[in-house]
Image (cartoon, rainbow, N blue to C red):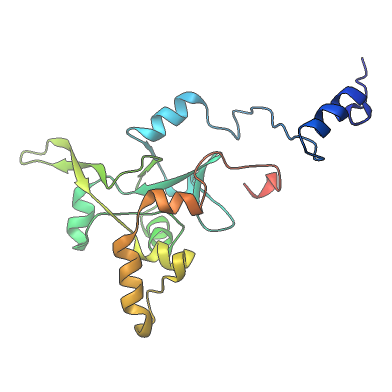
Length: 194
C-alpha cells in the first residue's frame, strides 16, 4: 500500500494555514535504543543508575547523557571524597577530573541521575565493615563549569576569580538545565552525534 503525499493534501494544507504555520510537523518514533523508557526514567530519577563512566555519552557540548536525557554523575562512595580531602561533587560535563577517573580508575562505577537536588546518596563504610546509605550535600564540579565555560566561568584566570566564585556559589541545577535542556534531547538534527 502506498501512502499519498500529504504535502499535496488540500484539507491538511487548509488546516495548517488556519493554524498559522507553513512548517510541516516533525514526529520521531519511539526507539528504546535511543529513547529512555518509563522504567529507565524512574530509575534515573531515584536513586540513579550505577555504571562505568565510559558508558555515559558525551554530547558535542561536553555535557553527559544517557540515551535522550542529560544526566549528572558522581562517585557514590563517601571514602572516595574523604581520601582525597574533597567535598563531594557531581559532574555535569566531561571534565578533566572525570577523564582522570576513567583513565586511572576504570573499574570505579559512578551513579548517574537526573534528580535535581543538592543531596545525593553515598555509601558509607561503618565500623565493622558494614555499608549504609546516607544523604550528603554535594556541589557542582568546578572543572565541569570550566570545561563548559558555563556563564563564562574560568577556573584559572585570576582577574575573573571573584566573578567565577559567584557563578560557582550561585550555581543551581534548574538554571543549568534551562540552558542545557535535560529531557528530551532531540535527535532530529544529527542522530549520529548522540
